[in-house]
Length: 477
Image (tube, rainbow, N blue to C red; front, side):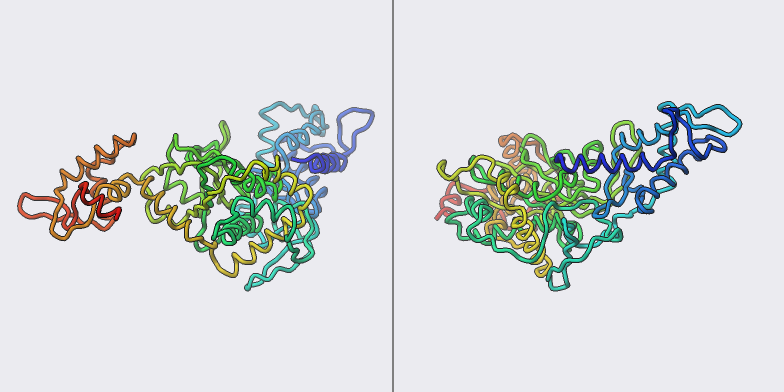
């Protein structure tokens, strides 16, 4: 979080405290003594003062208190809320002793305050558009953008630190150089840059999980200094820090990490390694925005809908637990970074420089990407991305990989089930991976289009055979 944003939030907290009942001579007490001093009564007083401070625009949703600050619904940090409850320690109770607070009572008061202000799925009704410094950029059905004034009804939790006053050309800018350096000489350069803009637009608008075919974008580049980390940093920096998570998909099945996705617009990770497999089922739920349950350690379970656009970077594509079924494949777009940027063209912290000096251009680039994404109804997909995804499917699903490398179609041949499974198991183990059970192997063979057959005591697959050296030579030719 930047210094300016931190300072503004502190001012907001100070305003809330100032609007609480007055204190005289440094002695705790209120102008309106409490009738009972119960946790519920104190919670009701707290809610009254929060509503007063925020003009009635206060809710509790997705595990946080939110107040509208004129441009966005800001989450009130837990320590802020606890400090606000502290005000009531020593408050006067009619005909009784003063209020005495401890940790458990503070927890109870906050819980009751949350109950009063609870609005389930409040942010599901978020207005579609990009919330920037001077208003909300809305989009027509044809993707045409226009600017409207901020409103609490927009239900936006984040605001981008730049103004939008119409399209801007990036020609000759640092931003153009940052975007083109990784793809110089690449015949798909234009399409790949479009994908980056669309991903940024998807994150900034909240469109990610609303698309008919949501996509997680994966930057793949084996060599170092290919620009993918700088592009990922650019996409992170477009959004406020609070709007961005950095959770690897390998951790999506862990409650304490998954809960960090609540309320985020973008989730990125540049550590997508191969040491652990991605859980395919959880991955699909996260990318598409299905309801998720998660919780922090020692806290209650929270149910929310993930809304973030996911962008990852890797040198080598990881495996997927359970293999690449069609549901997982539909949710992935691999963007290849194949060029090593020459040393003389490398600029340290280039993305940070662009964000610092050309943020209005970056916002315009993102708005243009969102507009195109809406017109198309889907992400631009370079031809190389389709090939990369097919290659990943073969790597991620050991049966598909085995079929690709060890099996060819042959009308005059048949492959016995036991022989096929033994060969598959040896091939998988030799590659350092664990083979599926024979039952799962058979199911995946059917899913790949190889239906098992039987004749008497024979069981197997018709019209295929294991690859011989002659077959390999023939395929190469």
